[in-house]
Length: 158
Length: 381
Image (cartoon, rainbow over all chains, first blue to last red; front, side):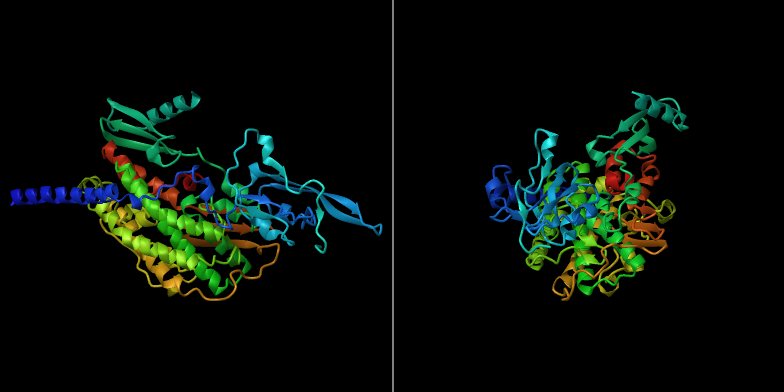
């Protein structure tokens, strides 16, 4: 009986190897099943979802106006100290002082893309962009000022 | 240089059974088979393993201490970096603990979304493990087969949560966004893909005679060993110890779902392998039950802007892809926790390694260690 079991084992082993090789052969002859993408050659056709968390940006409209009131909610929500809001006081036409942002400094090198700042913002001033290639040659380039120079707050945003 | 002499002198203090003729080799901290920066100091007599000493700390980031300076909303994102393959489930455990302290009622829709995400994460984690496991025993192709299905799940995550690995999707009171409009369709596509491809897993690896010879009867753990070392998850269930938190201490909606706790009694590497493969099918069952039955409603409960836990101690546990994760929060009533302790499954599962492979050949070490499914940042934290 030992011999029968031994031969059974050998044929079972060969069969199991052949089953695996059949699967390999299937993919060898069916090139359409291959799903490899050739990054970075396919950069133009990359389709990132709108919710993808790449980096924090501040959208500006065509009049160079943003929605940030300088309330520092994002600064408080950030776990890593990524955002620093530097405020100034504008003089309104009727002579009153009004708080506005001077600079919204964003340290990309500290950011973990957790989306808590965007959630915390009461006026939807910041959002996540779909960029993901963040490498630069100098570390100082990672510290960004999100509001564009000369920009001001949009009418009606409090 | 100091480090190396230190290690050798440490080992020389270990009483060696083999006596003369034994020697020490270091596997890691940068070795592809240790799945991260795990450093194993192995004492050998010929090819027989006499002692294994894991050296930890190469990726220690003091997450528990870091959490003490973050608020209850902020600390959840850090836990994605512990067991990064089940990031959702880690975040889920922390959110559950904060909700327990605050007594927040989570809306039904959020609960279903959370469970769906957990189970998808579990499938993705087991799939990566399957690929890496096969690679540990020398098969390279399965790794890419596994990544094909895992990629589909990652795409679903990317669309709904905005990230592929460290999602930070669970917040106290629910989930951060509602599910993407495409979510249900994409998940159904994935289920179809999974069912059309899962037979390949058995054809390529499970039935393979070489794989079976490497796995069967290797690294045998009895139920007593598993309990005394505190192992959980598939490692314990491979030895016949029932420890699925989803069944024993149900959280969210797990008590209303139909699924089986997978148990194998052999206790060897192959049993642990089968447990994980079958668990994937159970997760698919859960996803199938829920995907068409997501209730309407809010995805997030209304919570205060600043969360303050009442004074006291809170503990929750969940079943991650690797075992039981416990989150223990001590609160002094402020906005930040006084102390946080994570009971991670990886640490206990690693501790049994020496017991498991002592006396075995060094060739079996990597194969047996692969079935423990170690994620090193989870062990070190």
